[in-house]
Length: 256
Image (cartoon, rainbow, N blue to C red; front, side):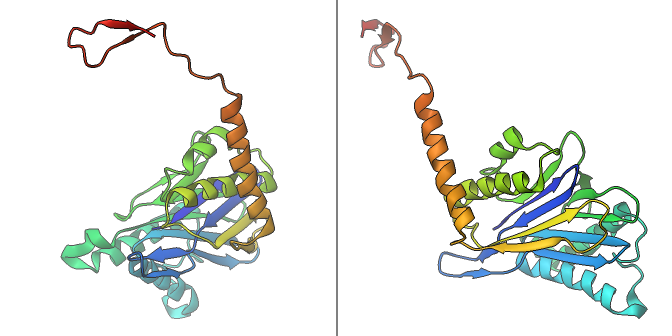
């Protein structure tokens, strides 16, 4: 499995993904799940993938191939005039990659996060489903997740704000990933991060965060300590003056 997040921010877009893939406890490997295409001065596009690795590699390979071979550039994500049309193209490509598996297609499904900017149009962020349809992030839902999303979602729901700085957003994402990795072994380091600044129309700032990264380690320790302190600062539970005897069918009360 995997965990990927895309943030739609006032300053631009932030993407983060893990690199762990596994098909059993004794078959664990690393694969990059973040892919970027840039046409300087015109567009920057980033794609995150979760699900069946063979399916996502086929889909990404087809998209990439169309950008490399001039004769086959139509349709291409580097030629589509809007991010909405890019999302349609990516959705169709993913749907075709899933359908190639025939009757067992449901076992080879994948989901994608697509984000980027074209020309003077605003940055946009989409979540693309295996069926090829998609939803778009907006003011009410400014972040999208795929993969093992449930463990890292609470911190994003509580603390993410599109007006945050890129630095604060990455800190928040590392807390989200630390929580996820502690709860699910199918998500693991290293993490890939892309930061795209609005209207730059150039390749995002990219980095890889390893397990032994000092900043990540400080975030992990600090978050654990902060949670412990927060729980300890909350008032202790108090039993009521009377409790019900669970062994009494009549529900007779017992003094504490």
